[in-house]
Image 1 (cartoon, rainbow, N blue to C red):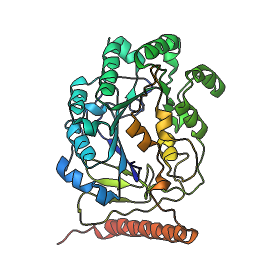
Image 2: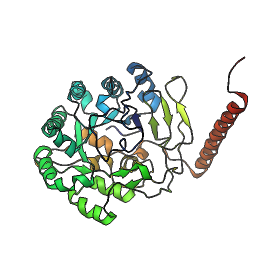
Image 3: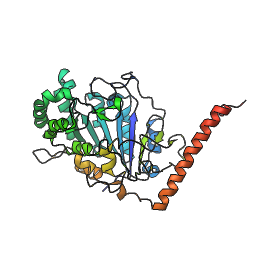
Image 4: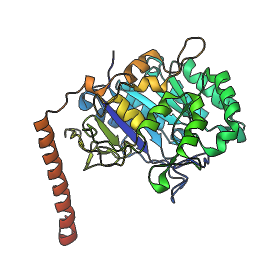
Length: 367
């Protein structure tokens, strides 16, 4: 059975979207919906070599999520194919309305499709207004029929409250279960809830969905993590377009893992979290960036069982997502953690020295 060696999160800079959801983090930014298309600097076959199992140390979980709609990214299918052909597992975040690109991916060899899962963002009101609810449901069913995994996720927005009952009915009819819930997040004020409700009202309103995914996020949302975190060693944030990688959303340093494939990747755990809370706790903590933090497993909280006994997440994918990073990696001793912190401090001092030097001496320009 495959076990996760590392998490590689790949935010994609495509800011094109065919929806305009009030609660979307993109709509909360000044630069929202610029219509920017991601530009990949390296071809898929080169990226495959850069992200080989040998170079990454084993089988990895990749998450691909664009600023806008992921499947509107040109040639994204080619990069997904390159990654899964290397033996990795891929999760694709999508509103599932771009059927041509979806069908291209579903046309991959079936032996590859059981290592692909879709996080289907169920924007109920946007789909309803555009007459696309049935198309969304058909696309979800196509994913399952082809042997892929798909989980359905709703953002619990205040404007959706009057439609809760009909949303539930639609979900049970077409997906065999209620959707999971994420958290509506207000990125304009940090990491607050995006709601006019009090915390208790918010809980009372949405707890009827019985989403253990939502429950775990609620338990960890805005809770500062003090445990030792292996992000940077067991996880990277990777710009798939350029090869630039960071330890996590906040990072002590950056490195480019595409420009020279003979150069080893620097795997340095971040240690102490630099954020106010674990920004993607549902994946990072359940997969084990902080080892032994929880017995909750990622595959379990993404899955639902349908009345016929089948599941949203296919068995092979679920087994992989239920593995833990500490099962495939060695934890550091206390002395090794101290040495790692010293090395990170050295990197940061070196970066600062070079930055100051460039300002004083004009960088590396030759006369």
